[in-house]
Image (cartoon, rainbow, N blue to C red; front, side):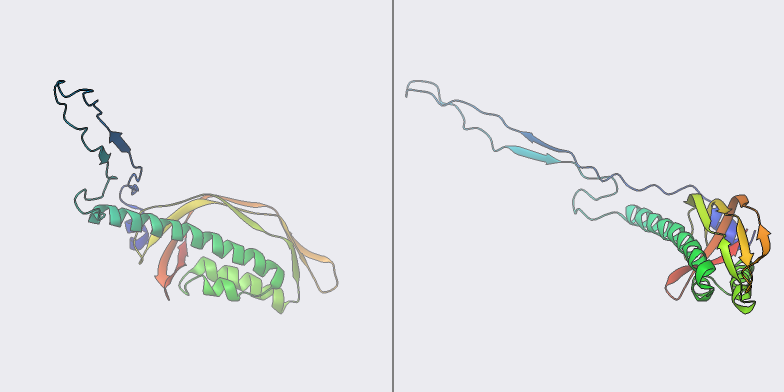
Length: 201
């Protein structure tokens, strides 16, 4: 695995701060005397409203602390990385039908060799005037490790359904069985403002 991959996979998983609020009200009441001879009683104090501040927020200013802001940013990055992997394979499933690799190119970096093989497979369908029956990919167990824009690791499992390649004559020219990868990893990096797949291992 690349240095970037190793860096992306290291460290403890970031935790989001607890945003639950606890609000309490305390009121103390007293009765006034019915006659002037009765001892005077102090008026009830103004109800006291106590509010607990969520973890990671400065109680005096209400401003999130740098640590909580960083944790939220990391959680957002990890969610974006998982979403980018899902989008890549949604693009693959569309490409199998359309025989256009444009979306796959847009969602991967040129140095991603496995991505280039995916692109070539789609381009070959069009060049040989073949169509694919099946071959859809499903993902499961996707999870991202703490990372940075330059490299973040997502792991999970991939299953490609059985696929038949149909020639121009309408006959099956080649068939492939179901393919299960087990746990694999995707390394993503930001390019053009979005996370793209840089490597698959």
